[in-house]
Image 1 (cartoon, rainbow, N blue to C red):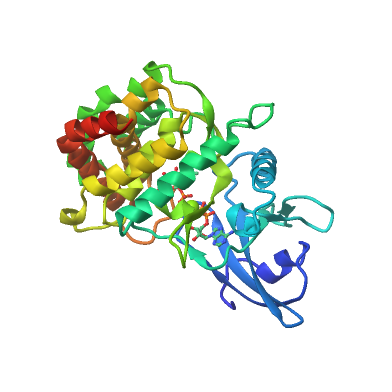
Image 2: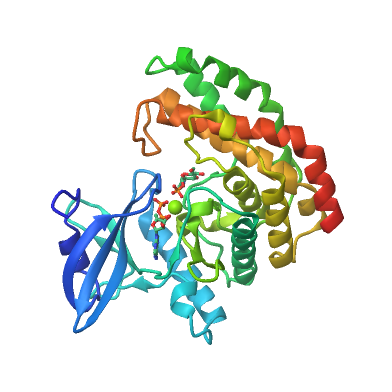
Length: 362
Ligand code: ADP
Ligand code: GN1
Ligand code: MG
């Protein structure tokens, strides 16, 4: 508590939280926002809250972002109005005393507060096909529940977020500039990336339907119930905006098929495990029951593409001097890039079987 980067007690005071502040600590392993858990005591009840500083270097318009989140959580809330477990099944914003969904502090930082989802947790790496199935069901259901979100279109919180050709062009520029003289440390990864340039356009060229999508369906962005293992709540809603359904499925394949963490240094541990993929495909096809034939045909490919795309982003950030993703050690972004590219290779080796499976079950 003493060493926290922000005055969490004072920030919490701006929101409609009842009771006495007990303590706060940093929380989670996200790469973008600053997340804290704060505990409050109200008579004999203790309650926890998630306080988050929105990274406004990355999300340039936090007001629009919060408008999206208010609309999305309200819509989801209405859909499960009668569920007695509603408070754990959709993120609930706590408003400020003047009724706003965020607080802007004197340093220009934007803060929001959610009710803490108890008796559930996130995992940084998948442990079983059951978990993969639950994650895919939850993310697919999330898309389904948002399919009838009333107009207007949601704000693009980060324009061209999954525009792979633009991500690739940014990498090419960074290689050329080599601003912090690191390109010589990533020769093999640069060669790998350049060899794969040809896959960048395929999803965009396929003219798939635009949907409301999550766009960051990392395995640690879904909470699994401690008792039942059920995927009960999709979190991290900053990038919910118009996108392709397959961006979400692709990112599930990226983060929920390999037993290794995203920054694992022992690359022999990184592999696309077929039973995990099968569970993801089954879970997603079951809940996202609106997919078109064309979307289904690209399910496997989306896994390869999004894994490649995020690898490209990690490589770009490494070469640019680590300005985007939080890093905790030297070469962290390069390590992350390496796991992604290793996973792309693993997918490539199994692509045919993966496609056959999808065809068989869809
Ligand atoms: P980031 O954008 O930095 O990834 P997240 O919104 O994903 O931030 O939050 C980071 C972590 O905090 C999550 O992986 C999850 O473990 C935890 N978390 C976030 N919101 C909640 C919540 N409402 N209840 C419980 N845990 C949460
Ligand atoms: C970031 O916020 P977090 O850690 O869930 C990133 C995603 C990347 C992911 C890679 C806004 O997600 O796009 O896929 O890291 N979020 C943003 O782990 O850039
Ligand atoms: Mg997250």
